[in-house]
View (cartoon, rainbow over the protein chains, first blue to last red):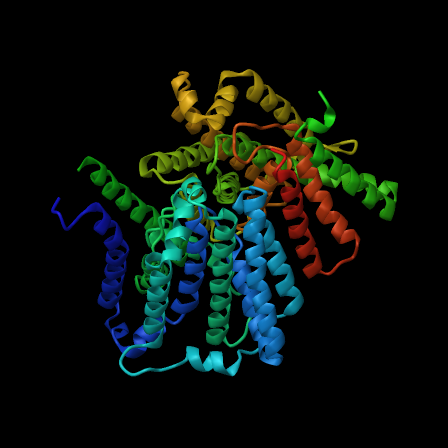
Length: 312
Length: 308
């Protein structure tokens, strides 16, 4: 293998190649999507899904898994569509409270050494419960400024593309290039050595959960900006979508090895898979199954890359 | 040994105290009825939790997230094949076991061949199983054979038949866990896989058998649950993802692996059912019920967390 095409670059390129492949397939099947309007429609939901995937990635980075993210995004969407619309101050406070709740979860999981899957599964009931209390029937209204932001029509490049690129770059520099980011990721890779070096693992976990909560809130707000109303189960699918997207984008689940750019690409790829399958006129029964199959396929390719890495 | 040192004691204490609350609100006869219902529903929780417990005991990261999808696929196929005919009861059951075997083997193949964490492997594969179930039956509900429904809902006095059967299975599994080579291998692998390997225990074979057993139990649970609830439905496994894991953890099995116990599963399964019943009895709205259910699960897990 050449010096420039190392296993590491291959690993980084894999998500981008998957995206390119699926995009090419869509353009081939439905050339009309290759336009400003077509792309806008195709990537309509990319922003909230990318934000949720980033939120999941921060949890994966400390070797945990969040099975409540879909419920949490639903809750923040409900708060956005009700309180943030009617009484902005209360809405902002409630959303800040959501972030704090996530930080507290991180502390609880760390201090009591709890399995994140069980805690987050339990919390998903709590989030849905609060969402049902806030918004018993579907409804609410999107605050004007969020609506305006999400329906921006910039010249040349559709808004969702600009938005996800900005998200990817901001998180990339925050987590992958900053000094604090190195410590945060190190805590997932080798918690013991990070602790020996004098960093508080508790602080790391609380920070990561808080950031995850923050992106969860953003995801809910973005979602309401697109749908203009909310309901208590609006983002139910986001739990699995976010995990699959982050994994697809190169997160390794153990060892703090994550990739924000990959995560955003993974999220967009999964979103496009849906459109691709419907353009194929594939039986909609296989929609979920195809997502699973793609996930397995990408994991298999990554395994092959890793193996060649070891051999060389 | 001091009774308070038993890992399963907390689940049972919780169960008894919640039952006392229910009985004091709605009276003794209603309390007995609730207990019968708890045994009926708890049986299904225990059935999947046994498999999940063995998987969790294999060590950190080991958990089977494909249980709901496995239940749905196995029962959907079995109900459609049997098509309500009692002559097909045994073939239907064999199909269910075969599906469980296949799913377990497939899950383990993913884990081993792709070298990915079991959580991710079983999550990805569950998409495939669910899609297959949807495709196979388009979400239609086929009635179970009369005899299966009768058995699944049957009672001796106030004790559900199925609860007796699963209780016998629990005792059997208790024996398997603590007295057989296979059971002790699982514990050894969970405590220290490397040491177990050096001691000559076939680690991968043990893991393989455990994942297969978990899937077979989930498939069998789906079979009887379909008989119990009048057919297989696509969302029938939904609550079993949380339940299978929560029952294992609340029952006092170590999440870090290596230590398991079966009495706790029954305690935790009854606890979970009674908890929901109690919140219903209190006449709370759906929102508050959900919040309390989640909060109590998290609280119980947090309290029992550090003791291990």
